[in-house]
Amino acid sequence: MVRILLFIFWGIESNITAKGGTTIKTINTSVITEAVKKMCQDANFNLGNDVMEAFKKFHESETSLTGKEILQILIKNAEIAREEQAPMCQDTGFAVVFVELGQDVRIEGGDFEEAINEGVRQGYTEGYLRKSIVGHPLERKNTGDNTPAVIHTKIVPGENLRIIVAPKGGGSENMSAIKMLKPADGVEGVKKFVVDTVKTAGPNPCPPIVVGVGIGGTYEKAALLSKEALLRELGEKSKYPDIAKLEEELLEEINKSGIGPQGLGGKTTALAVHIEIYAAHIASLPVAVNLNCHAARHKEVVL
Image (cartoon, rainbow, N blue to C red; front, side, top):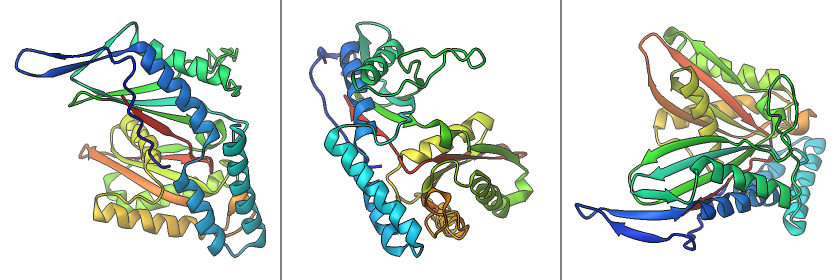
């Protein structure tokens, strides 16, 4: 989905020059709350231009009449959502928030994660977005405000705070999978696992899907990589030539499955395959697949 960079200055109290000449930017939690609130609504109302263009591209190449009709409906649905500022899907998602916190940024005014959760709370309540979160996974009582969010924070150089809000629907999330392959399984083992995961999912994740793949790291790192892969603009290739080639091969293979739009047949099962990699232990080859439905939603802000 297209990355939207918004540079917001209100609520940034001051820039302090620390010993050694380092500039420390101070950001109030109220600014964070306001930014998250807006992104929760924006992500659910305004599908990125990259996804819309992918719909149109695959509509032209789709040979199934039913598939073509479904893709046209998805385009129209997204246009109506944008015009009326209404959710493009009834499942407005678990608020997954990725944060890159510059090491020269100081947060003031309260608890950082609570500021994010307050933004989710306000965004989902004021935007009349469905509240889908239960506080206890077994007792199943709804929290009533779509909190808590899932927050991933990374400390990075610089004096900016980058926040990405990626609402994740339950249907596609449920079809995701992870497997600890043996190093000897190699590239062919990775390809088989990814394609088999998509075929097993079938119509359940509301295709055409975006396939995020994480390879390497540890069990939890591979899963996180697969979700981070979904944040790339559709069709943006990996910086590694061999991985970019693997992305193309997987997309071609997945679209030969015949699952098609909404699982009703056709050539358009996936809009893109994105792969992120990390170093791995000599004895391990973790692979995670995180599927995203056709509503590939995320927005970002830089403060």
